[in-house]
Length: 499
Image (cartoon, rainbow, N blue to C red; front, side, top):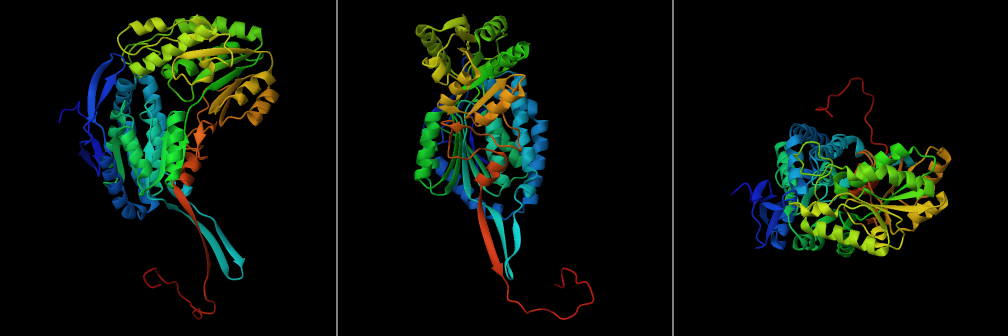
């Protein structure tokens, strides 16, 4: 088997797909196919689920401290292989090597969180809830859980899911994006190298056929998803219909409000990284700047324009590159169609990055629009590319209303020096993750990630304690023991073997 022909990993062993459909993996910087894999069929997916189900009983009985030890070893292996993993991400996604290294690091934080799973699974105990009666609760594993992950974070998003689920005592089936499978497969190999028993983590690469088997197979108890809103809503509805827990983290249109009192140099630099990092292919990317007052907007446009024009664009292994290509030809064409639509709708295109599409690969240069209005598709839709829209408003109240009226509520930020404005914003904005002078407010591992409105279906955020709660079921035990059965006086300590 050629190293360019990838295989699924089921029961700790390499496994060829049986769908008859070959999926191609591209290097987006060149537009060339670099690897292939035969898509997992429904039968292949069912096999992975059955293997996970067979492994569940033994794995769920492994003490949490032993599971934590495997996570400690896994952590060391990820650190050792960070550059290798980052290069796999960059080659298939296109993001810069430094960005890919950072992604691996953020995923590693979740693994580190799972090394303390003993603490996260601690239960409550209430003595004497009635005479001679005590009550306590347990968090127990669900069974087989599944994760369906997107292309834009091939390392981090999978690690939001399976380490938490596995540390809680579940087994897992991970369905990788067919666009970027290599890093997820390598992370699975490292998980087995860390000592995870065969069958606990099974990793497949597939499309809708594999997804539908996950959603309908009765052995799957819970499904985690990160991706587009249309797909996420389908997964939520179908999974829920089949009696599964579902957490579906979906689309976004993240606004950053810039107040007149903000440090505009700081704001401008923050916008550049948040809007154009990873070519805008982040669900937490800032894609709308809401400038309060024309003077604020004019100064931002003046500051942003040369910075966007001077972005160094290229392949991940070129020196000094700040932004790579988008992931596919389809993404490139979709982004260009939105730029065209913005111009047609009357927005002012201050920086036009469409000339970058003439290069080999799937490149789109940074684009900056001014005078965008809330009716335009470049404002309403998630473009998922390096396109930034500046909307002008006259007041803070108008800015807040703009954010709250949007159908998405994933992330937002405000840049201001005024504590009262910031406090009012964080309290009243209808968005799940909020930054104050922080442009991309992604929660760290011990907190949980999740949006509001149509950015989240299922009501459960991911990782942190929300993740532990999602991957466990609560059992409450109320007990009373017959009284009066006691030994008489005892004058020596009994060892455990004598009790």
